[in-house]
Length: 351
Length: 202
Ligand code: SF4
Ligand code: SF4
Image 1 (cartoon, helix red, strand yellow):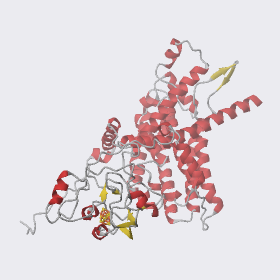
Image 2 (cartoon, rainbow over the protein chains, first blue to last red):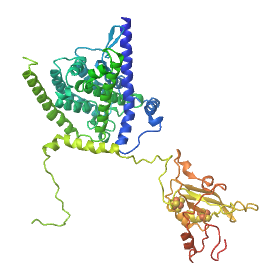
Image 3 (cartoon, chains in turn orange, yellow):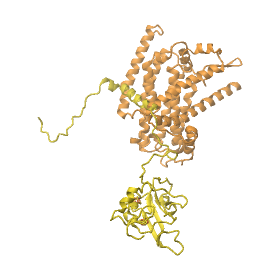
Image 4 (cartoon, rainbow over the protein chains, first blue to last red):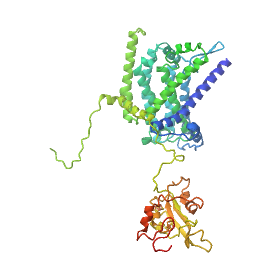
């Protein structure tokens, strides 16, 4: 029992540490990558190649003056960013980070928890994240913040529908399982889900952009209209939490996309490769190599997120809603219908 | 034909978006290819304090107050530069040279205080043009950044060149300029090397 608790605790610590670390270095890479795309150099003064920049940024955030507007609701004002950060970190719990590990005859899975409704858990937690934004924006007692929060929540809610439907189509292809571990494992045997669900992936990807409030869907914080959007009134580390949680969300979204559609910690000819270098199932090397493959996919997705951000201007708000409700939702329904039809013809489901 | 008042009329296209345009995706991909192609381009950044941009030989940057060949300050506090300055950036106070200070000041009257406000200065070079004593020149040095506005008011400590570290202004004071100044009407001027020309006594 104690061993189990310790093992889970260590795993949690690792996942949190990795999430935070990746988020921190995403901020640096975002600046570097934007610089590369714009023929600039980017931050390079703090440490070699600017590697200490995230530390400097974090330190700066801590030392900024902390302001809580007197007209705001103090409790909710603090609750907002905390909730946003909490939900961002919670999503990491159900993601299978690597293959199972056998140490001393015992199997340890590289996943904090394999609940059989993992997909629903993800969707649920992601929607709770909206409350963080909404509460924060409302408690600020500021028009811009409120408008930003309303935009953020309506955007998140609208895109969650299309996202949910495309995930249902994915679950149908995956044989009806809602466990992320099984979804990843069944891709090990056959092809990655992207082969079966290209349209579903596209919809999911667009919705993930909108869910993480990143360009071209960064209307909740569009500076030209709303000053800072829902975090206008925030300063110091509370602002830091909002900004940081966004990067964690980006990391987790990339992880989910890699797990759902690109086989997670699998890679083509993984079994043959492990055989060729003589690794047995359960070896720590398999877990590590698998994690490496997973991580590579995540990093590629993060780069694509940034690439899009530094390419596209922001949508207009009516275009955003139009895209969500009149294009993506019908498309995802179509995708679901086709998926169910094909699976029925293949005899995988019967009514 | 409708009455046409000017020929600057322009027909603006207001055509419906085509299907592929409404899909956004082709346009997005095209845009991403454009930005993506910049990954392989060289950055144009000049890392300023370590690298400097090459400037023209006659670049007008931070001023210097010259000393003559004996190390005495050339400026005689005549105020011509301050009068010429369109930005009113120059102020000065004068003082009379005492006995025994001949090695410090070239003329009988000198500037005891000489200040240029680098925030007001527009680096036009008119002060240099106006100076009858060839005392002030602009150089290719760049005025440093400061934290306080007051620090931009440069006094004599920053403006007068150090005896052991003379500042070369020959790039701005070319032979041609010196020759030009020999022309009657501009002959009140002296050559940069300090040789008096014309009939004026300095
Ligand atoms: S360069 Fe022009 S603006 Fe500057 S001090 Fe000389 S005359 Fe004035
Ligand atoms: S710098 Fe030249 S113009 Fe200005 S006060 Fe001195 S001598 Fe006169």
